[in-house]
Amino acid sequence: MLTLTYEYKANPTQEQIKVIEHTLDVCRKVWNFALGERKDWLNSRKSPVNACSIASEYIIGADAPYPNYNRQAKSLTQAKKQYPELTTVNAQVLQQVLRKLETAFIDMQRKGMGFPRFKNRYRMRSYVYPQLGKGEILKGNQIKLPQIGWMEYVKSREIPDGFVIKQVRVVRKASGYFLMFTLECNANVPDTVGAGHPVGLDLGLDKFVATSDGTLIERPRFLQTLHRKLKLLQRRLKKKQKGSSNRHKLNRQIARLHQRICDTRKDWHFKLAHKLCDGAGMVFVEDIDFRVWAKGMFCKHTLDAGFGQFVSIMQWVCWKRGVYFAKVNKDYTSQVCPQCNAHTGKKELKDRIHFCPECGYTTHRDVAAAQVIRNRGVNALGRSVEQIACGDGLTGTGNGLVKSRRSRKKGGKARLKPAL
Image 1 (cartoon, one colour):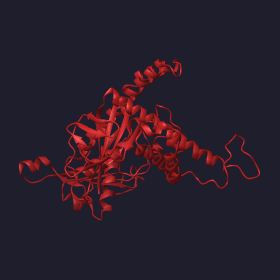
Image 2: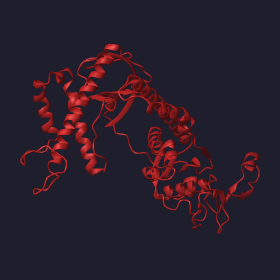
Image 3: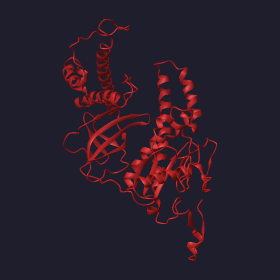
Image 4: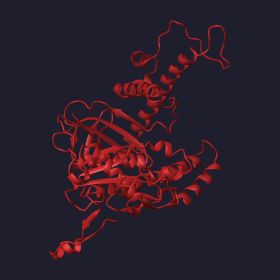
């Protein structure tokens, strides 16, 4: 089963916007009530039997079961008789809110994520239609949604043949409303086989990406470009009264600026990923948890670069274009010579040149690290760089001698020179 998600810009009418905002408001109330019910049950079990909690808590009987998804979904059906507002929203939409809360608690226990939070009117930004009903759903650039009707959207790309729309998520962003189609196709895509030209990528703050072929890409400052304007708006926000209309308008202006930064970064990541895939058969990156980088001294620059997002986009682009993608061990990539595999010692941040005292190989520090990453990825496949390169002049093949391109173009005898 192949699943894809396509995002489109929606063009709802004023009546449809009211329905969307009303649905988001009811979903927020259901989320907060269900979360409060679970939180009260957990707090009633915190204190020992011979002591009381310092804070006042609800007293819940010892035989009261834990309010999981099944019990809360059943209570939701019964609550519709007491609260008619719940009947104005699609029943499956409210059930998905409870299912999302159940997933949040599961992720908190298994993945170590934070405790779910209560949502105000700004934090509940999306809801999902798990089923769209029978009959005609799409008609040109319109889609039929429950309780909304036919809604226009910007059809920026066609839905691929063989795919069926399983569900639609309505998302509210600073720049408007968006529709996210979940597409499914009953097809099995085989894994990409490692073959072709290998490329290693080394990510860093000095150079965003350094490839094993010697390409150095500068790191663009997405946040720094608009930081002055963002700082000015946030300084004005501090003086606005909470709950006022002026504060709400300024908040929306700040949100649009943040989204502009985010969209620019994501667009650049996609274009760079496609550029790196051109001519590459295999792509290898370091297996790094960039959340650790985001807690260090250069946390602001790390978050501005978006390394984790770029690696995810790179993996998706490689899969889409049939390029093999893999992660390798990150340890000591800057302390090993890619030419002779000798340990060169630890380098400081100011040292930007790699020099091996054993073989004399000299190159840029990040390029050498990318070549080590490439070698580790190729060796993990059970092959050597020589077998994949096939005499293509890659650094680390043979005795470090490559043919001169000038002599190959002339058709004369190839001159040998050290590979730099």
